[in-house]
Amino acid sequence: MAEKFHTDLKILKKDTVAMALHGRAMLRDSVDALIRQDKELAELVVARKDKIHEMEVKLEDQCYHLIALNQPMAKDMRVIACTLKVITASLRIGRYGKVIANIVKEISDKQHIANLMSIPHMADLVIDMVDDAVSAYESDNLHLIDDFSSRDDTIDALRHSIFREGITYMMEDPKNISRCTHYIMVARYLERCADHACKIAENVQYMETGERVEIH
Amino acid sequence: MSENCIISTKNLNLWYHEKHALESVSMRIPKKKVTALIGPSGCGKSTLLRCFNRLNDLIDHVKITGEITLDSEDIQGPGTDVVTLRKKIGMVFQKPNPFPKSIYENVAYGPRVHGVRDKAELDKIVEQSLRHAAIWDEVKERLNDSALGLSGGQQQRLCIARTLAVEPEVILMDEPCSALDPIATAKIENLIERLKEDYTVIIVTHNMQQAARVSDYTGFMYLGKLIECGKTGQIFEHPKEELTENYITGRFG
Image (cartoon, each protein chain N blue to C red):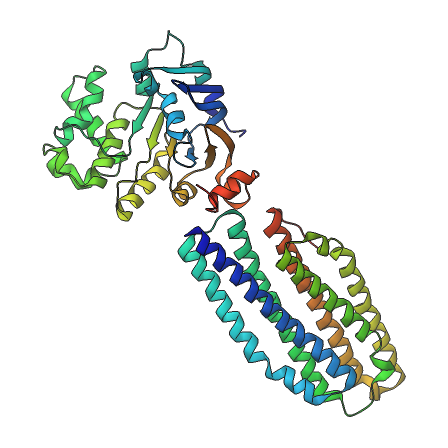
């Protein structure tokens, strides 16, 4: 009985990692589409939203099913609690990918201003955080999320710098307003994705140790 | 456990012949709380429970060392009146064991033994005890019927009423629901929740979900040792000891 439950729990984790990677791929592809002004790739990202919603419902059902039938305790309980949070965070990250992809469709007719400022660099850092948070969840390795607090500070600083730079370009020429507003929004979405990576990290910490931590 | 404690043990050891059944158990039982003892079969949880009202005295070749106190008084010494001790510390067993007498007599038996003779007084105790044990409404019309005609769950609640009739301070329960169906079990569990307003309850159960549902504190025992004891939420959400973790997640036992 317990063996079957623990096998089911491993499958749940594996499937959740697959969902997290799906959300991560939506975000990565949306940023690539933005950089390359690739509307086709953006369309493909938007088309993946149904799949990630399906995964969310299916995995949540799996969690509820395991809770109802096994009344998990201690780490088993914490794994499921953490998994539910990872599912939500992954869905949100995927949806931000979709939102960025929609922006790509709107602003790809004219050249980018200032090579997208720091957006590509910021996106790389955010996606690294998502990767490390998901790997920590998958492998129970807390070292991967040790420095999340300072990494999150860097992301916040980048968002602020993109905001200020964007304002500068807008003041220079009102024709820049539309695109710069979109850049500022993209930076905001990326920052939110980093927050979701932090949320995953906090929950992985709880899953592993039972201790609640807050990553600012 | 910083709570006001009613029973405490210190370095308690118990041997059945050569078998070392309890090894240096030190624990504190908080007053007016429910404490659950969990652990695999043969880990010593029932043995520990039976130390609290000296039920192990009835078994030959038992040797006990260490200290057990009730309200700071040693209960092991020759000066302890075992009858008074068992009045203060009542017990409910796995299988309901009503006397083959009427429902009324089952509850009135204890107070009579302890000297209550007045009929009106006995009637009052019987009604109060049956009400406390949440069975009054089911039996008030047939107090003179045989207790053996009650269902298993009702018999168990009658046994709890019988325990309450002598106004104990502590109620020991040894697997009180293992012979009952889920509805009767739920009634006993609800009753335990109410009992802790007036009594200290110590429950031995092999059903971990039950321990999690009904208790405030949980002690996990393994091979005669108390491995970990703490607030029930902490034990079931993030136990400190790996053995506890492995047991409650079903990895052994």
